[in-house]
Each structure stands twice: as C-alpha cells, then as structure tokens.
Length: 210
Image (cartoon, rainbow, N blue to C red):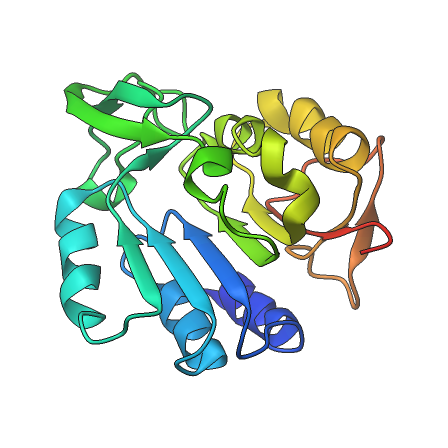
C-alpha cells in the first residue's frame, strides 16, 4: 500500500455503503478487496477478480466464510474466451499484453479464461464502484464494460501507458459519460480531468447525473 492508496481510501470511504456492489479488478494480494470488505460489512456484494491462480487461491481461502465475497480467477478484457497470459518480474505483475509497463517484452506462461465485465456483471442492476488495476490492460477492461456501463456509478482506474491515455480519457468522459478527477496528483483537492489533461496515474470517475 502506498500514499496513493491511502488517499483513495479516504475518498472511497465516503462513497461505499453496506449494501453496495463493488468490483475489484486486479485484486492482487487483496489490499483493496480487504478495504471494500470492511466497508460493506458483511452485506452487499464484492467481486474480487485476480488472474494469478496463486493470489486468487489465497483470496479464496481468506474469504471462504464470506458468502458475499465472490473470488474470480479469470482475466478481464474485451473478449470472452481463452487468451494467453505473460510473466511479469514476479507473479503479482503477470498480464495479458506480452510486455510490461516499461514496454519490455515478456514471456508467455500459458492460457487463461478471459471474460468481459459486461458478461460477468450482466445480472447486476446497480454497481457502486469498479476499481481497475491491471498492469496496462485497463483500456481492454474498459472496452469490455460497454454494455453495462449505464449501471456503474463510479470507476477508479490506474493508468499505465501514455499511449492509451487519450483513448481512456475519451472513453470515460465522452462515450461513457463520466466526470473524472486526477486523484493521484499531490496538489490540495482533486484536479478535474478534461480532454486536454495530462495522464493521471489514478483517476476517479463518477457518472454524470448519477
């Protein structure tokens, strides 16, 4: 956990309520899953999604007695089906891109089932928050959200590639109709994101008129 996470927790604790549906895409070791789990307090529903089998199994064991926590060991992207996954510097940094966040080529390590969020969450009627931290595949995750985005109130996304930023920004602001702020900047308050904004490492978005 770093100071960005702590800052995000201060923001999110005012938003998340006990009966909310929360989605943690890229749960990793469960830092955000644990925070979300505490906030919904045994109510609501929490999807904790992690493609690494070891990390996912650890989460499954930890939350085995919590029926409202759904552990999903799949990749989230813009397609449904089996896709290759690639080794990171360690298993917490595996991804589906074939290169790391420094654009270094990575080695394929097998195949994993991929699912779009609009397929996984199609039966949910009201999703309070989707948090996305997927080692550079965030645009694929957002593309796979298209058919249920009207049900989503808030998105917290960690952005890794400058080359994807314009597409991410346009999708969130214009296609998906969110207001977004840069919650990773070190200035007082939250800096509003518009079409001309530089890349935000982490941005928090709220549905317009939502």
